[in-house]
Image (cartoon, rainbow, N blue to C red; front, top):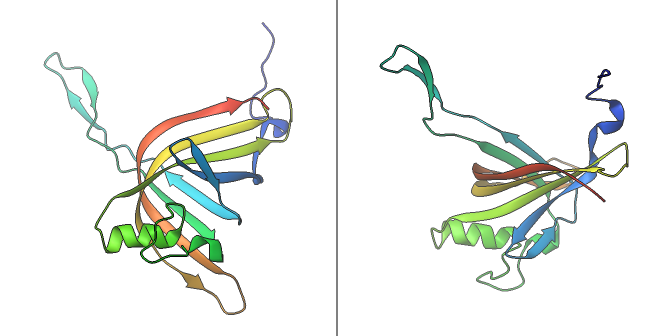
Length: 162
């Protein structure tokens, strides 16, 4: 068996060719602006000894979190009050602040690799629970909306064909 090279430059996923989507049922919403999505996986596992003296891993939960930043555009605000468009930031804020509801979405990060072969994409699919929303304005720059929360379900990370 020959050597197998892994982590080649041609296989590298690049964010500028990727995008993040919100999935509501079978409908997908692709953000119109550049955005970032940072996920931190944090398992709260602990080690315990069983009755035979063997070290065992005990699942104690998780504290996975995400941070996302969206550039604010007018389509991130609904056209009616109270907001009904589930794809807008105004809807998310209304649900959290006024109705005290959980706001979740399945987010799909699709990242293109440089090789462009039969599997040129890497997909990451997780369910996010939005907990914090803000606005940031730097003088002379665009207004961004930082969004923070918990990852409540990990679906998959897959190679995908074109």
